Length: 491
Ligand code: C2O
Ligand code: CU
Ligand code: CU
Image 1 (cartoon, rainbow, N blue to C red):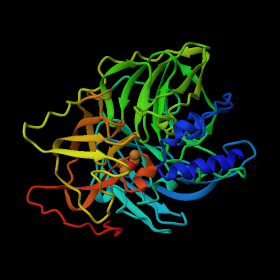
Image 2: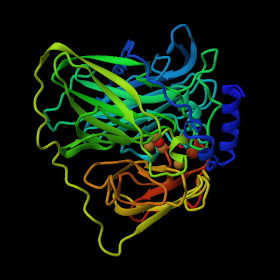
Image 3: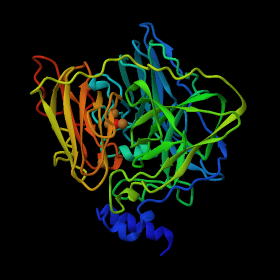
Image 4: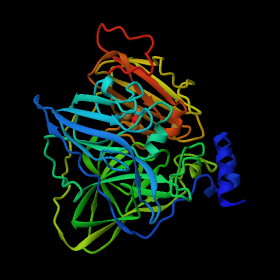
């Protein structure tokens, strides 16, 4: 069998759900192993999105989603989709806590898309989920007041059933929330405060992204793109760099580290109360970590991904890319570095979520074969109704052999037990096979009895396959809708 037909065969087998067969097939065949390549290109830094201020003092951004052509590998042109004039990826939106922002998203793609602000606390109508479609040629306007602590968030499409494809073609960008609480962390964008957006692709012989060879985990590639750059290096001029790492991959997880301890300063939803020295950090799709890396003059350091079984057995981890070890980014410190401030002992004074009263609602979500509580996503169904501003305990149990994760829109979470427990702010949490993750979940302050938020696995193939539920956030006295008007633009 040629390598290609062998992969097609495995892809078909896996698509049918026969993951157990992987163990027999050998561990590297479940997903194409990532190859490390010698660092060859400077890391691309997504530009900061330009904005203007309107008469009402609102900060206005315009983003267009459009097809383009990218060159990732020498001599190969790759058809891609991007935002804001970039052929792939998107500019970084930097917004301040307290300001009103407006983002006008124009769709120049050949099909309907949406733009979701992952991790943002905002009204459901502005969330950019499956209920806020943007038809080709149309412009959708999202506006909200930014009111959450400093964090690394991101934006990406969320059209029901097509999220994986839209993201895979290249649509995703960062949103940095800046607040007024001074904290002495490196903050010069692209200099010592560096976005690191990880994603992986395989290429067909003519240079296109391979959209065909997926397994039960999803689309995994043999080539890692960091901010769209293959085999990147970064010239460093300071003794410390802050890396804002986003796992924007459709399916692959990464365990990132530099071979010596790094300082973890932030997670999905903001800064930690205090820095934590760690050997590495696991990022499943959708998760973010802010780490500070100490640099020695003239000594190169490599950010790598290490193997992680993701709690799975029998080759399932390999199918999720968990057997792979590979380089992500080489840091190249200059011979002379300017000193960076030491990482402060206190990063955030934000109070942790208070435990809900004894006897208050506990919501339970059982993850199985691409279903939650046995249900497939129905865009018209109301799955949960949550009181506005509530902090509740939610339990996620993975009864499947495969790793999944859970992302909750409009919410900030703190995990109560397991390896991720603690005061880290999360919006996406890994749930290993056979485990339960309990979290305090706080939904935002916006009530809407008609338009839901989403709760889903962020392995995009699973989400597209229906591993997603909807919840309404309602105010006192509001009567929640019993069905949702699907696919209708509520804006
Ligand atoms: Cu990052 Cu519902 O998505
Ligand atoms: Cu989200
Ligand atoms: Cu999943």
